[in-house]
Length: 371
Image 1 (cartoon, one colour):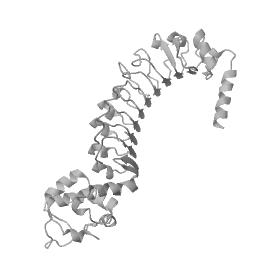
Image 2: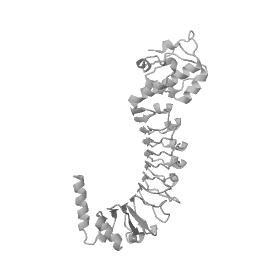
Image 3: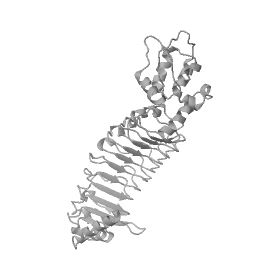
Image 4: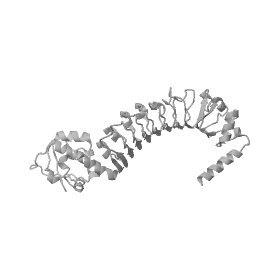
């Protein structure tokens, strides 16, 4: 039904005028080809779609667009434009140009009203020579651009919501200004095989919900700072060089799905296996079911060091651990190394572990920790 309604709407637009150049939408190949060939477009045209119907590319001069100053949607496939890009409409909001052949988007092309830029399978090496301020841009898709080496300076596109750069094998640098994108919801860098690291600023993206890094075969590390991505719900990073799941992943408040280091699935299913992989050799013989029900029944701290409320919350909420006061005068000593391994095994954060391991002097024997 959706296709029928779409086609009916297109036919109504086509019948609105006998002259293609005076129609608001030019969906049909022959109509778009006619007005670009005869330079007969007018300000009435708001949308134009032209896809090359053969293996060769078609070429036009940008002058063909000069009178179409009301154009808001432009979709080209296998089309080359030569001339002054200042002839393109300043009202353009949606640009889909498959196979864009220039090395970058020309400076004279006004893009201040663009909401979507989709340049899949382009030849660009960089997006812009000089970045314009584009406060309305929400989607930037440069997938399958094999010559693209770096992302743009994101400070000029502050309201970006989706950054899609799948299969850009020459991409080796993500601009550190990515940290300013307070509205960014999705990053897709799948199969960017030249990318070996992520900028530290990327972990400041508190609104990010989906991060896709699968196939980035040179990427070998995710920082513990990923915990700052407090909205992250999906992390897909399979087929990378990453060997270790960050501790902070397990204490993430929002993450629901993960594919990383051989672990794949919903967090409730994968996190227990990740925690198990962190256990020290001395604890590896304990049954898995018992480890999930570990309960601390007593800890003695030095007078000035108290267990942080955050650690209490994590252990209480995620591992069913409860704290009670007990007499510790007969509690034997346990090494800091063993305590560190135990806390790591329970998935608590690494910064707290480092602090506690230096402060605790006595804990109950290991056998008394099992419920």
